Image (cartoon, rainbow over all chains, first blue to last red; front, side, top):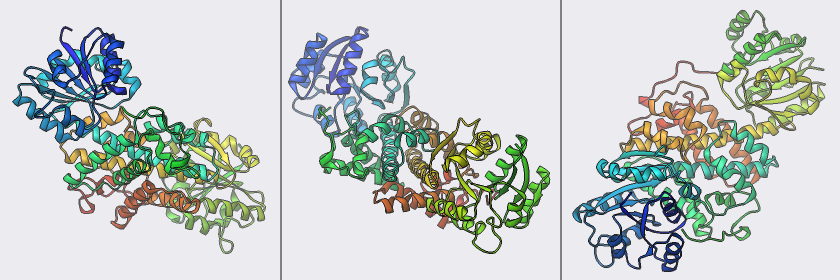
Amino acid sequence: MNERIGFVGLGRMGANMARRLKDCGFNLTVVHDARPDVARELARELGTFAAESLAAVTAHADVIFTVVTDDAAMKRIFAPRGDSLFTNAKGHVFVNCATLSPAVHVDLAKRAKKAGAHTLEACMASSITQARNGTLYLMIGGEDAVYQRLKHILVLLSDEGKLMRYVGSAGRAAQLKALVNMVMNINTAGLAEGLALADALGLDLGTVREVFSQTGAASRVLATDGEDMQKRDHSCFFSAAHAAKDSGIALAMARKARINAPLAAAAYAQFARMVQLGLGELDKSGVAELTFKGRGPRKTTRPKRKKR
Amino acid sequence: MNERIGFVGLGRMGANMARRLKDCGFNLTVVHDARPDVARELARELGTFAAESLAAVTAHADVIFTVVTDDAAMKRIFAPRGDSLFTNAKGHVFVNCATLSPAVHVDLAKRAKKAGAHTLEACMASSITQARNGTLYLMIGGEDAVYQRLKHILVLLSDEGKLMRYVGSAGRAAQLKALVNMVMNINTAGLAEGLALADALGLDLGTVREVFSQTGAASRVLATDGEDMQKRDHSCFFSAAHAAKDSGIALAMARKARINAPLAAAAYAQFARMVQLGLGELDKSGVAELTFKGRGPRKTTRPKRKKR
């Protein structure tokens, strides 16, 4: 429990994981965010240090969790020159939790090795509440030795490890995460069509959801998003923009592997259209705004919080 | 328990529902199928009468379950002239269990009324085992009075009624059933893409299915069809041809209601393609034959039983 832990990327997920590890008694020594005020606020809340540079994060922590938005942000914080987490990184371990293109993890693992550092993927397939409670579903990719070294920390993020799976070398967890979200996004976009059509036909949506839940139409997203679609409650747990990004990663993998994926392509098109229409920061349940009669971008309630 | 019960359409579903009602002590007086040998065989098994004409079915039963394949078969057995279940049908009740276009139920209800007969929709959202065990999920549409009159029979098909829902007037159950299957088919075709891509990437499919089951990718079809997709076990519970038919019905409703349904369209295209390729009698899990690398129509194990 003596290693110094840092966090980079203090959005809804990162901040709550930091809170959770602090609660568990870990030594949270440094936090950082591209928005300095956000970092300062969390540092005050948790009684820790808000580093203004990435190099300072590495200087103040042995194990650094990164929970940033996308590939571009990831490349920025691990830049080859200028302010970078790779500054004097020898012996440090980077635990990368964002959903990224698998190739980014593979590249990062290589570059970390050259710098004498280690990386581990810890892809999350859960949401904000689970981050706060330490009940995240974690898919781990990377060297087994690194995994073993960090296991005592990771188990406290994943319901004593019950929700953690080691899935292989660097990039493997990102691949699997992209697949999870690809299938989830298909199910979500499909559900939005089913409920919209039921609504247009004048069927009672409560009955419809109940029937769906007991039949072959049942799914996790029916439970998490069905009522929100009906009630137009699209406050953000997992944004449409993230859904578009993840389906895009999966589609790129499918193209490369020459797998025909027409449903994934259709789901991607729906979430990309949400982004185009300015609805990207709605929850993924907001895809129902594209399918229900009488709904649309102009009639949509916008969420209060806009960024991770 | 004294009403005389008949069955028309003795495929996997109809025959097992007849067996179940016989087990429950009902008075099964007549069965009929377009294939006379099938009817004779079941009649022998259940100690009942195999009618050679539809008119004879109506003559020998008060309550007649119809479990035929599609709209065309339904129109044939209820023909306005020639051999028809509507022959001397006054006072008889027809319980129609096939998945049909909603308009067919509405039309049938009208024509039954003219003939002094009654109809009830009992759309099933379950499969063969549930038919045999009396644990079918039933969606009931039609006049409430008719429903009340038959309830003591229907409850014995639907786990003492726990799995039965009255959803509205004639055609409503067919609408809801088409929606259930539309969403189910989307989830199935999407799952086949996710597993195929995982396989192409060299991920362990057992791990992938386990991760899917604990995340936003979870669905009923993952539980029922995931392993079958992996192992290419496509012996038929719900055929791709039926999936194509039901998604087609739902898409027609969507067009009429002007609901944009790109995922439903993509799923329909996949199941329709299976039919085109001669794979229509595989189980719906066979859609994985279209997505996995190295699979395809020529390499597919065909099921033993070919028709309902």
